[in-house]
Image (cartoon, rainbow, N blue to C red):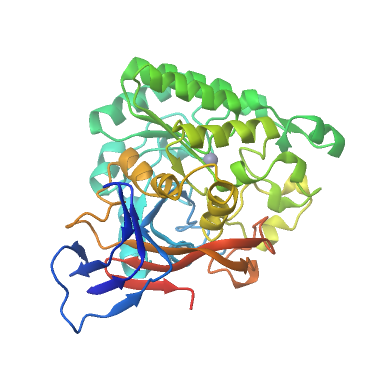
Length: 422
Ligand SMILES: [Zn+2]
């Protein structure tokens, strides 16, 4: 629980600090006192030292789908990706729609996960979109937000009620914005490429109409509302507009949605199949612009492991989703920082203060007294992602074999080194 991280370039957006400085963790917390001579040392010279990264959108598959991922393996993949805190979506079996399931996840995570895990509770019972889940008791058991991720709430009246309850409990509502009638039968982004491949299209409008509806309901109810994995240019514009009107609205983008387009979709390779789908160049540029100008608050992976057997079917039959915890920092560095689109400090913000503010977590900062969670990464070491070496139980990544420059080096949770590259 005591650790001195020595000689690194410390960048902490919560205080604006950027310079060479040691970080001392005492009894699991960031300390400003002088470390004794016998304290264990982690050498970070030549590396970037940042507050522990937070991924607010992860699927851990436990309980119920443990052949694809568990709280333990997902936690290990998070640590190997440089994350110290993850939030898990409720679409398990059973769905996390009661304090019983929430408590199970919280306790199990304490026992087996190397990183902090915060559950996100369902909006509706069984995420069926009909009756509200036991939101208040889940809140007491530890959920930090509610979402029916993967199964959007189609009934606007139910969504309005959920926002009213969430507002009273002071937690955000996170929506996977998709109009299921518009996206029905679709396997990839609707455009020239879907026509060429002969696959059913998912139009951008299926996301846009739900973002519009939810922003209107957020205005009506005064709830804090968060758009999950935003993927279209119009979504970015609408969120920017809502923010300019003073609504308590936030949004996240995934690394795959800013790194690759539908043009790069390998024909019929199910590791390129996810929801929302990879969009066109215009949408990707709008997402990047939103990252640059501050419209987008967080980078979240939507880590969605599926067992090999499920992803080895014909494209149309495969489930949606890809893993993402271990490639997020590499993609953010290569697509955003090394291309000089954003500063390192801005990148760190998107992984730390951004999600921490949305979920009101006392994390994402290295101020004295904060939890001793630290992410150490480097900027220039070349490495290749080998999905066969993944800590996740699943292998469904489109980034297998991709070369990266810079990536995670060490992950420290509560003063304990839980993963290191060497
Ligand atoms: Zn989703």
